[in-house]
Image (cartoon, rainbow, N blue to C red; front, top):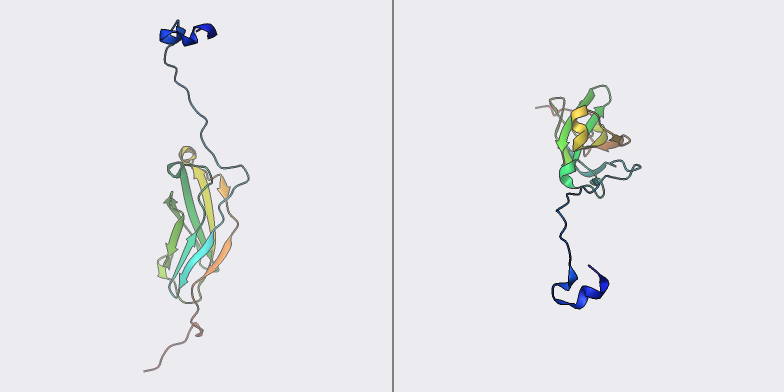
Length: 143
């Protein structure tokens, strides 16, 4: 329209455009962001590890994998989808005991990366421990 036609009935519109489909850029976490796990809760036989979600990324576009390493016992990984916490009650099929220590790592990827099988961002290992009971590991009560 012409600027001078703006005040008239119909406001001077002279042509109608066709609908145009646009695609907005996908929201992604900053390049420097990595998950930072922390111990949210602990008990004699469990550890709850948690981390903040990828900032600015819709929850449904995020995937996380948590990995625990126990000295002398190997490594265990669990893909937790878009959850931002995980409770360990066992490690490789054995119940956690008071004073057990795990080194926990969290990895992140965008759902579009899932087809490649890669994880683009990894935290540093974070030590976590069950509640210690103060007893020696081999302690047993005699009956």
